[in-house]
Image 1 (cartoon, helix red, strand yellow):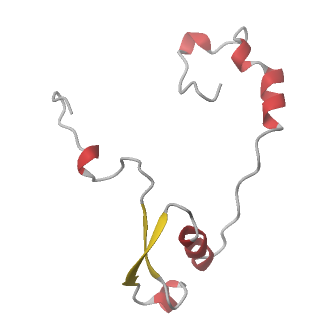
Image 2: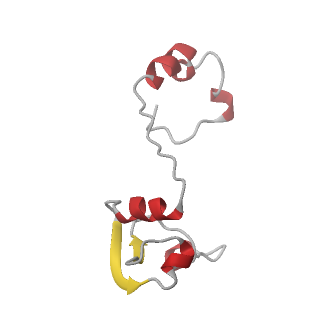
Length: 98
């Protein structure tokens, strides 16, 4: 079920065995509660800094105390591999391939 990215609207019904109530109930027991409440920006910085895909640069952040960050904070970069935002790969001209 996790490998199916989307369903056709006609397939979303009570007769579809992949969407049964019992299956949903059983699968729920195997999912972890993987969230942590972040109450301040300092904690958010710490969590982001320790994320495996985060790169800590040598660029210092100015006004750290005003921002609520640790005094020795550095710029963080996350190379998660997804195409987002203004990257060249995210821009496409409609009607042109690639």
